[in-house]
Length: 281
Image (tube, rainbow, N blue to C red; front, side):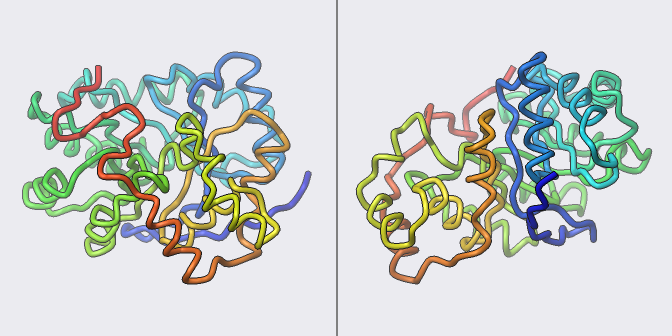
């Protein structure tokens, strides 16, 4: 097994989490298991799944097949929007564990706030209860805006450990990252490479990659890391998995960071999913 060192960061609950993870969206079935085992063998320790990805079983199977103790992994899943009521939320977390064949999740997240439902505070209280019961070790959220986070803290006195949001050079979310940092919430990035937006062909990024001797993907992921964000890139390809991890042995200069920051668009979302109005099933 190749030993690759991914630094760890400390969460607001005192636990630690890898500073880069492996996304698992669309990594399902036997091929998904193979890809996840390959990722663990390459050195990934954070594996990010979700109830709605329908691959918690594949993740659990990969954990059993991988040549590593479960305690050395940081496994993540997410609560779907349709199960935000307390009892449903707790049963869903239990079901997530049964699907994966696990005793606990290292981190469990509310997938979307679904503000029209008005249940995300109830869901958050359920996650805190699940944490007390030992079903999960850390509790967090996805796609929560400052207004949603403020409500959670006001109603429960507890800030999420993590807020996973869409974040990439075309949608850098500087204000959200700053808000999270002020409240000691770690910002994670889903779709950090925004491949569907052809970001790999962005001239600015290609020029920085040429000067640094790195790939465009590595430049983007390094930008995340230096911005204080934990990227969770998805790849089923062994070569890309290894490439995406190799971002802790170089630094981008201030000018390069500024140039990447300048790529942000007024609304660079991949699919226009605004958490202020978007409702997940």
